[in-house]
Amino acid sequence: MATIPEGFIIPDFGTTPPAVGDGTASAACASAGAGASSEFSGPRKISFICSKGNLDMAYPGLIMANAALGEGVQVNIFFTFWGLDIIHKKLNKKLRFTFAGNTAMHMPELGYVRPGLENVSFPQAMANLPGMTRFGTSYMKKAMAELGIPPVDEMVDLLEAAGANMYACKLTVDMMRLIEADLKGIKGVISATDFIELSEGGQIVFI
Amino acid sequence: MPVNTINGYNFEVDAEGFFEDREQWSEELARELAALIDIEVTDEHLKVLRFARDDQAQTGSTPTLNRMNKVGGFVVADLFSLFPGKPAKKIAWLAGLKKPTSCV
Image 1 (cartoon, rainbow over the protein chains, first blue to last red):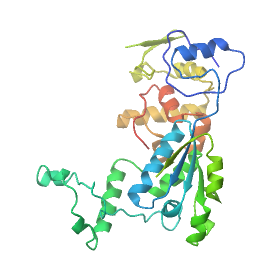
Image 2 (image 1 turned 90 degrees about the vertical axis):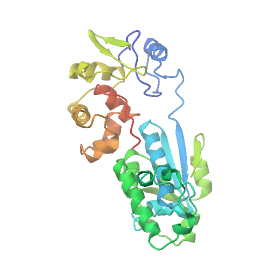
Image 3 (image 1 turned 180 degrees about the horizontal axis):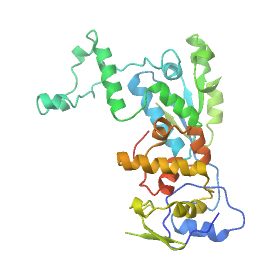
Image 4 (image 1 turned 120 degrees about the vertical axis):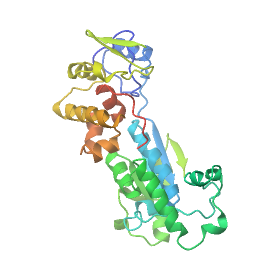
């Protein structure tokens, strides 16, 4: 690796394994704020537990996992309970979003109807009307697509390609009588104990 | 604004070290920079960097890995092996672009 010139500002590309026999380069890295630590302790590790199967609750884990992978973090994802729908081949294109029970649901468009309406919570009495969940789902899908966020099934493909280690929860697979062939992108169906074991030393995010 | 100097090349950078002006970039400079982060630039690397620059010229923002895959047709796993660790940031830096801001 070439030596970083003095006063050179280089973005933080994370820790790298120590290079052989160039103490000067690593010292320059540190002073330039490259974040290269003197002792390489392996890549940072984050484990996500995805337990929800609503469209709006599927995205946080997938997006954060994707961001973590892009930052060079080693990522494990454990799909459990309703979260298994995220990786279910027949279901993950059909995840839905409901207004019911979500008091934080506001619609920016309503602000055009009357200023202030964009901050009003969607009336819960209307949330269960027929067709409302279908409307909410397509509304959310449209909003995500406009921001360039891929659909859930494509996000799962993206994560797999980026090297996320994804696992399905054995208990849930048994309980819901799923078959492994219906689940995409996973490295295996494992127990909670297995997951705790392999997430050792990293941060865990439960969603 | 800080100015980075390497082997006779000067370029303005932001506080983190990303290019302020994409016109101060050249392929030769990219090679010099790549050597600093232990990447030997091949045609494969250049294809990615050129796409990133063309795309940025069109959209005004640095492409994400997802966009490089969808629009550029690059395989995500390949991007990770060409630019190990933090591919999106490394590509942005080596292509003379700003730090990517989009989430996916």
